[in-house]
Image (cartoon, rainbow, N blue to C red; front, side, top):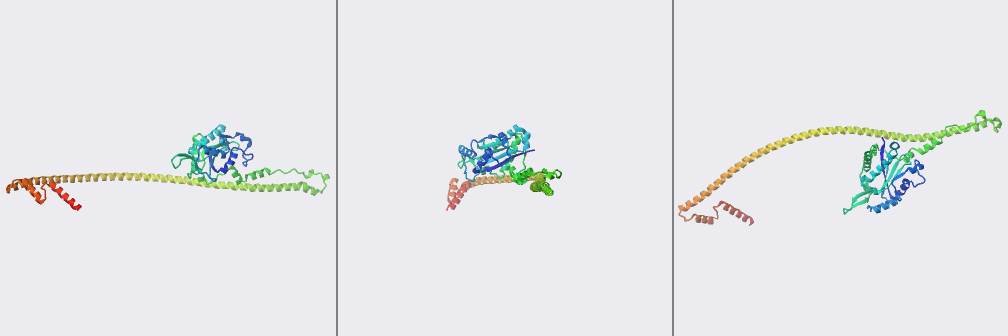
Length: 417
């Protein structure tokens, strides 16, 4: 299955001129030999710039009043290169290839709520070995100023703020394309492979591809046309026979052998270098396989730990549930016991209060009877006068409630003094 590819590059203002001329095919000569100028008419734009990228940037910034500090070293534009492999596009055909890039264009406009207005250019190149799209946009974030007003801000660092921004981009783009009907798979993240991504030109330099190709084209494996000894016309010789043979037969063949030998040495040297690259690739592949195996082993270990955790968690949940029930039962039992004890205490207090109340009432009745008896015994005219004189002289009230109030009032006076 083919991989879906989206890569991002960041550009300063000084870079815009070069990528504009390349993307929009404004150059006469290109360092990339894969470009077939006779097929450039097949290229098309999903959004064509009216002006150069620099001028387009200035117009968009002014039109949408973009905020943000822009310095000479600031990255002001980003470029997605979106593609898959050659076989994928061959398989899906022309119409689906166009839909592939149109879908990708829509994804970019929606990703992080960018908005199509901040896409400067989107050009599909069909004049190279594999179709691909160059999409240049302004990294704008939608935020608020210090007063809480909504603003659009040009801020590349904020647009790619998260540490795993590119992983998020790759994951989201892959999901989006698959959901739109393209049978693709997600590439292995660079964190797992530890491999650097090389462009075609970089890989050609690494493998000395140009020199190897040139050497192979110039190597001649056939022998040159030289006369056979039997065909030599001795009569026309102006030199001795041995000198003629040496000059016209032996020396040309010897020179040919030397040239072939030297060419083979050059070829061997270049192929050796390429073999070293392949060996490095195999090394990385083995490391990748080892990492994947380790990841599988780690994944299995995690599953075992998860099972053990779930088992222990269930055991702890059961123990907790049982303990909770035990505590609830103990609490209910103690609550019931305390409630019973409090009821007994309350009953005792009620009985005691009832008894005291009866004593007080009886004492009051007794005092009244006693006063009347005293008045009659000592021939005192009125019991009221006796009570009044007693309370006046002793400053004690026979009314218990009044006496308690008087005592409380005297305590307050003592505290105030």
